[in-house]
Image 1 (tube, one colour):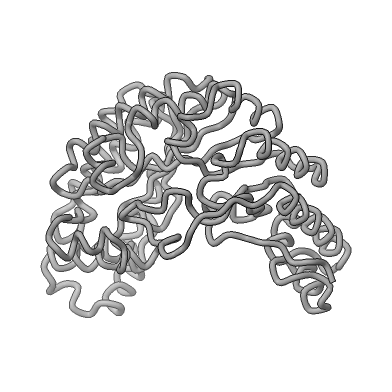
Image 2 (image 1 turned 180 degrees about the vertical axis):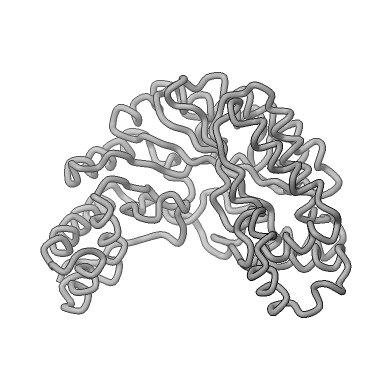
Length: 381
């Protein structure tokens, strides 16, 4: 049987069919108040030899999965049942079935690995999997801001193509409040160095992270960071911004703050207004906006800015201009999976389905429905 190999707990949704290579365990910071993923764990580096041995085992697994017949992931299931490959082989099967094109480096901050060592790992991955087109990773702003332009260019030359970076907020006040461990200046420096090194950069923004008290500062600061970094991205490789609406996960420090009355989470209507304000504040900044997570109310909110700005603002206005009850019912229906688009609220079958899920939906107040929708958000994390 092929030796087992490590895999971390998370990856971005866009990396669902990527080969997952764990180069560092857990999170080097692990103090963000909103995050529950690595709490109670400690970070540790893995040796280059250890990671390379994992990559070799994955390559052997990929060869077995591809030869298993019956297609992929069925081939991966067949190989698992035969006992020839470790349980982690299913992710390898997804990777093979997708054309063996994409690799994602885990866990939270592989860029904390010495650049020469990380470059050696990337080089070995590309050697063992010559069909790979994209190698991506998470990165922390504080780490990337410490890397020199030459070091990041070296990683790009080795074959690193994209960095996923949690911006969350561009407001120093909000960043400090959620114990993010970086500043707006580091976000600009780290992000700019990534794009200038020739790599794609994907920023994650968390609408609602400023709570009700810091919403204006959150929007203003985030727009400023995005504008600054977007101006350095080449025309053919614009900055990508993915929205991740804030939710309070039980047991996190943010939940403790909320219970103590120190954080007041905005509801879906307030978040929609915040996102609208952000789009306006971005002005003519050039970037691609993605709303590709169940945490977000409006999955349709996707496009290239500034070209699609008018359409995206019109979509937000369509929601915001509904009467209070209709807005609240849509928010709850969206959180329950009944509605996927704004147009779905006009579908009588879907409206009936919402009533079957929530018999009192017509009698409940807008505030009650929005509060219920807000509570449901955390289940998507």
